[in-house]
Image (spheres, rainbow, N blue to C red):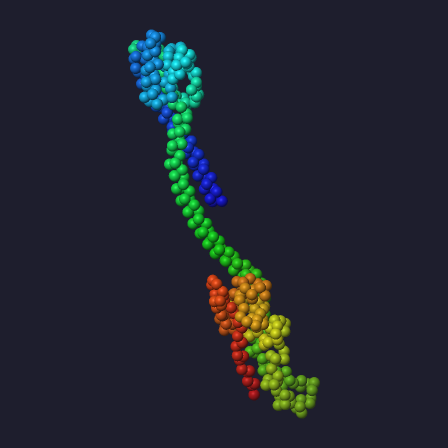
Length: 369
C-alpha cells in the first residue's frame, strides 16, 4: 500500500509537472510571438506598403523573411479592415483573417492560444501604425501547438529522471519504515503473549495461594508429633481404666505412625502423584502468579516422558501457552528439579530439552522420645 501510494503520488506529480511545463512553453511562445509582431510592425516599409495596397507584394516578402528567420508558423499582416496582406499560403492573401483583429485594430497588444486557418497556435498581435501613429492594420505571429508538443517531449527524460530518483529514495524509505514496524510488531506480539498468559493463569494462581500452608508442607511436617491422639488426651472421666492400660509406653504415635504416609492431603493436592504412580510432587517453591495445579501438570508430564522433551511438547500436552510452560520450567530448573539439554542436531538454533531428575528425599524426622 505504501508503494502504491508512492507511485500514485509520483504519477500525479509527473502529470502536474508536465502541465506546468506546457503552460510555461505556451507562455514563452506567446511572448515570443508578440515580440516578433512588434518588430514587424515597427518596420516603416510594412506600413507604407499596406497603405499603398501593396501593389508589388512587398508585405508578403517582408513577412515571409521574418517568419523563416524566427521559425514561426506564420506572420500575417492585415490592413485596417482585417484583410490579409501576407500569409504563408499565398492563396489566402486578400481574404479576411480567421480570428478577431478588433483588439489590435483598436491599439491593444494581445496574446492568445487559439485555433485559426493553420490550426492551434500560440499567438501575439500588435497594431500596425504609420509614421503619424495612425493604426493602419495589425501584425499577427503564431507558433504551432505541435512544435510546443515536441518541445515538451524533449523535456520528458529530465522529468522522468527526477521522478525515478524520487521513486528510489521513497522505496528505500518505505522498506526501512516497514522493517522497523515489523520489529516493533514482533516485540508487541511477544508482550501481548506474555500478558495473555499472565491473565489466563492469574485465577489459578490465586486459587493456589489460597491453599492452606499445611497442604504445601505436608511431606516435611508430619502430623503425628504435633497432634498425638491417645497418649496426650486420655478420656479420664469416661474411661476409668486408663491407669491400667496406658497408651504412651505401649503404642507411641510419633515414631511408628506418622500422619504423612497414612493421611495424605487429598483435597489440597489432587495431582500430587504422577500418572505412573511415582512419588508425590516435591515441595516446590511457587513464584508470583504461579499455580500449583499447572506446576503439578508439568511435573507429571516430565516424569512420564521417556526421554527429554521440549517446551512446545509440554505446552501441547497440558493445553497451555508455550510462554506459560517456559516460566514454570525455569522455576524447576532453578530449584534443580529438571535438567536442561541443548539439542544441536537440527539446523538453526539449538532446541532446549528438559528432563526430570529426582532429588534425594530428606531423611525422616526423628521421633521425640
